[in-house]
Image 1 (cartoon, each protein chain N blue to C red):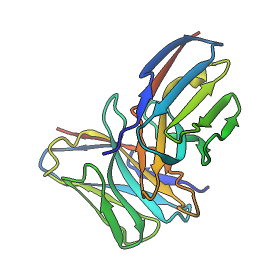
Image 2: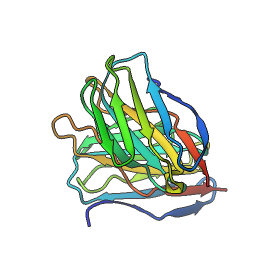
Image 3: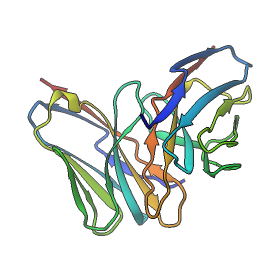
Image 4: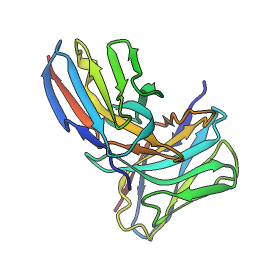
Length: 111
Length: 114
């Protein structure tokens, strides 16, 4: 099936640092979604993007829908311990009834 | 409270037994989905349903079956034909209104088969 390349696979940072991660594909997407999953729980929707170039914030999180519609970016500013978890991107292809998920970015924060 | 309920949180079964995982939503969402997640892996789609009494296979449907008799409910049966059933199973729903493809997830059921 379709693949989303999410990078990096893991990040080890100090508390207070900013974080950047991205998802890329060779296909064009109509929708990009970013989720966070904590251990043993279901993913929680953080941000939804619907237009190329769109930049949306949710607190310290900011996500962008790439101009080419083939990529998306998530930034976390001034990281705190509760930001720890796995972040997934997901995209909806034009005409598709389902989402394609990235493999996830595991974020670890050293206090 | 509106949300998605999956029960139980942990499920243990012996090899060769079928087991049914429950998923209920009171969000009035049309679409529902089942995913499988293995340790350190992403989400893989098992089955999805856009409307009552209709469902489609996802990427890894072999060894699984579903039904959608009610809008609120989308149970997943893991059959004995599934060769490696131990995994974390996630149910999701989506309003599918207009351009919204946002999916909202339940808390998951961890199935262990020995």
